[in-house]
Image (cartoon, rainbow, N blue to C red; front, side, top):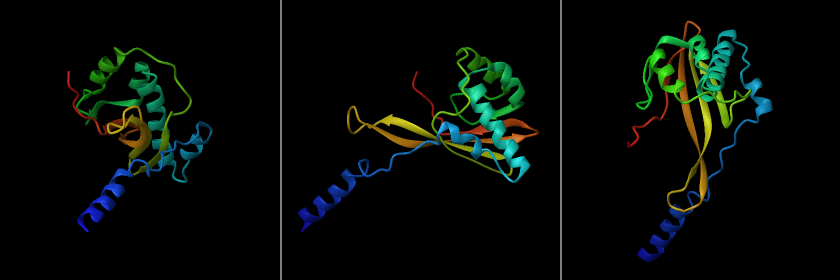
Length: 161
């Protein structure tokens, strides 16, 4: 009986990744509709974060950072400095990239009470199956104050040097 139970449990746990439903992103052509809201403040907050992500974080336009970020910007990711000036110095070294009119991998954007959350598709290598990839979801949350990105949270971790 123990062998039978062990085989059942092994079967259940070994199919976890295979049984996963893949994360799907919002098609680029449909993303603008996700920014709309009957509440003009929520719509403005969503648009601010959406544009900040595209222009500052992805395209690394540090002139746009001045427009979108509060001077006393607070960063909760331990790998990125806090403060707008420190952020600009760190990201400015990376060099600008092409600005896109959509967010690659966007799954959802939600907003309430000045907080805006982006859910993003991530594709990672399965550490248990060499060469196999799987999808998961990454979340970034921003606080908007006085029409600027004032604070940011994500699943940032300290990396080995």
